[in-house]
Image (cartoon, rainbow, N blue to C red; front, side, top):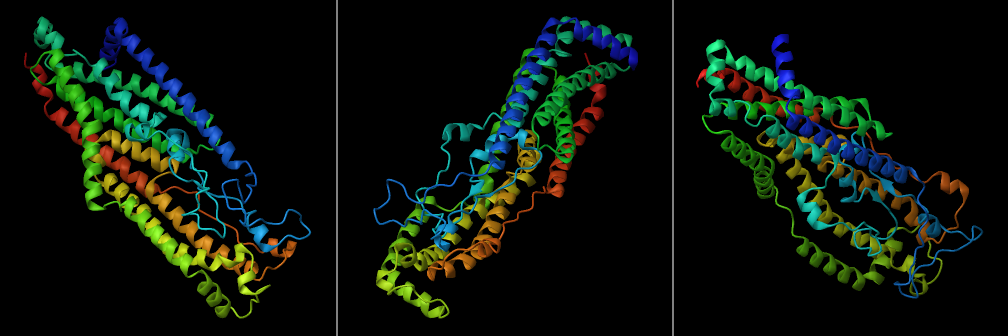
Length: 460
């Protein structure tokens, strides 16, 4: 076996095209790893930095908008409520794999007495929708796209060219097991490609200060299986009695189908299984809720004080400040809008889990879903984060609203009693293991098929 490896290495290294392919792949993956690692470092630095306090009004607001006191001497519970730091979704140890996904969802949520669902001053980032549809070029995406292409290039004409030139007939007459030559060639290329992928992956993790050993070994496991799947596919195409050009075209067609068409089909099926609610209908419903609560503002204010006799208004109801006068209406609006917003997160969660179950049909899809899991931006985790935020928001408002409605002054003792947000920063190892096992099952099936058909290599 070692003699075969040494001979195959000489054959491989003396082909300048192979060296150029390997060198170019290493260069591209290194650039992607450096960019992703530094982007993850920057994201963690920004997430860890204290948020600057935003003014509660801006030029676009009405002149009578709520204005909290400027000095600490006359600070009230209303002004203190705006000092709350944003609630952040903590990134996991695999952030460098898919850091750009963090920009597509609100990972920092500012809670206040206003409804965050209807506040037009929310500063969410803008992004290119076309890039969102095509996929963001993070490290995991680049690896998933380029690796099969490099495998196709490295295995091009490995057997078919020898058949066309008549050399393969001579090889078969000199050995009773020509399939060992093919398997040795595939094993050598698999080892070289896996070495590059592992080195660049470790580079990306090394540049991310928040990377974890758990994320590293789970990622290395699935990329090893991913490479194995594609080398097995390449080996099966070598069995076909077609020319090297036809085999390459067939491999490229397979890559297009498995990498793009199959995930699109799975996404379509996921949407049919758990249909995403209509955004337009949600906007119309929200506008109706706003109109209804505006008409009931005075009644809701009176009902609130009637339900809380221990809180006395600081002035007649009609002369209360705007931040107090409209607070019960805001709470009523939020209680009706929130279930609409939860429907979107739940639909995304169910669709993500559906795609995980069928990811065995597309190795690239399984790889990207694993990157989402390891980065901590997967839909199930985000839905749990939103649920925790909603629960904490209710607790936080339960503390602040009575103080604001009573226009109570603010003290250091009250500040110490403010509820604290806590969200678990752990990943879901069972879900990650299922993705790896799905990839492993596909690799085992393809390898078993290749081994069962190994004697077909002897046909000239």
